Amino acid sequence: GKIDIGTFATHEGTPGVEFLMGGANPPSNLQTEYSDTDPYLRVFHMDGTCMYPSVDTGHCHHHHHHHHPLLITKDACTALITHIDETATQQTQTHPATADIRLPISQSELARLIGEAHVQALINLLPTTTKTDACEIVLRRCSAHGMCINFHRDNALHTVQVALNGDDQYKGGRLVYATPSGMFTPPRPTGTVTVHNNGIVHGVTKLEEGVRYGLFFLTR
Image (cartoon, rainbow, N blue to C red; front, side, top):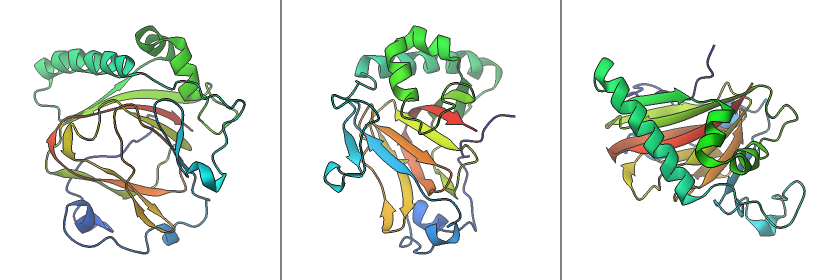
């Protein structure tokens, strides 16, 4: 079975949904309900610089070397968006108006589109030994306006997510993490990479306008 990457819907009655839909203040108790797994969260700039936790906290060491590998380029992001859009056009002829397209892609096909070096650099961010064995790769194109993704924990063990277009190119649709110190919404310009485990509660605010593109690496 496929690993679930969250569903855009109205999610009425779920914890914190008023906040995600643009209304109430954030709930304070979301992370504490799930204390059985330590939350893991890293945010990287496309050039490999760690944005969260900030460098001065000392948590964000890269595994091997001090010069960061370039994780992805704007051109690579554009190539993937083109690939999804072409597929979406074909799909829409058979399934009209699919507002949230998820396209599984093999590692070799991804490497053909963006180069093996970027694929390896992204997979290397997975904090696990079985990096490629159980790794699912999914491209996503979402235009589900008026919908959010409820606060949840993933059933994927680890998730690497690349923002293929910047958060200045759509309105709403913000990735929000419920951290022990409160709600955290990382800025996600094109090429931003987030890495998290299934111990951290997160959701996505209501997508109001535009299209949101992502690349996901998921491990079991």
